Length: 297
Image 1 (spheres, rainbow, N blue to C red):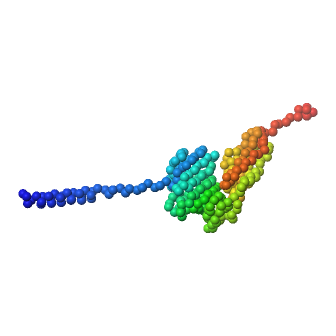
Image 2 (cartoon, rainbow, N blue to C red):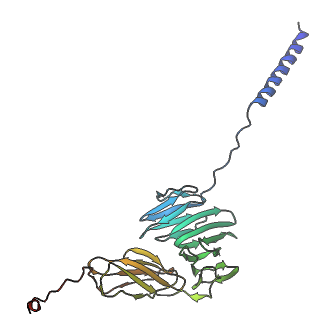
Image 3 (cartoon, rainbow, N blue to C red):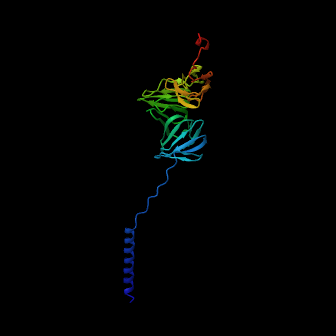
């Protein structure tokens, strides 16, 4: 009996090991644990109407300060609205009114973004060799910087304006590139390389061709010229100046007395406004005049 005990124990151990091996073969492998990606941006302050469209979705939803933004999320601002995006490394982007901005990929050496329409102002804090890259929808223009502050404006149809307020911005388009230093501006027209450097204007000029003061219809065209890339509100309707600074808009009028009010803002934040003379609209047909005295002659 004593001699058989080790043999029994050895057999039991063998069965136990065989069972454990069989159990390991039937159990699925443990799930791979992946760390959640760090947010590409976070909403700081929000003023007015600001919405986000999450990557791959079609619907827009309101945002709140502190909301996390991931790759391919698009932020848009309404009139008289603004959003501040906090980026990694204490950098930030201000999305101006009437703009749309797409958050891109945030990598160790490069962070990319796309301005769909309107204007953003980027304040970049240096972080080694890390570059911040801003593209513009409707154009192949790319603005890159490692540090400094600059504004980027686009009409979404190929016109791009870059103003450097501090540091240097490398601007490329149509196979050519230029460095925009502090206090300078460069403009990219559709399918064209960056323009020659020019000083950032300290004020904004606005020339307007007003309609006649007496009209017999309820629609008129208001046109004029201002700084390239400027945004204008014409009686509350947003319009953008072309690469030459020209703009034109059909404006609806009402019967009776009217005025057209224009306010303009350029990419550097300069503003100006203008107001038309009083415009009288009378769409009534002229009355039929009858000469009663001549009727009986």
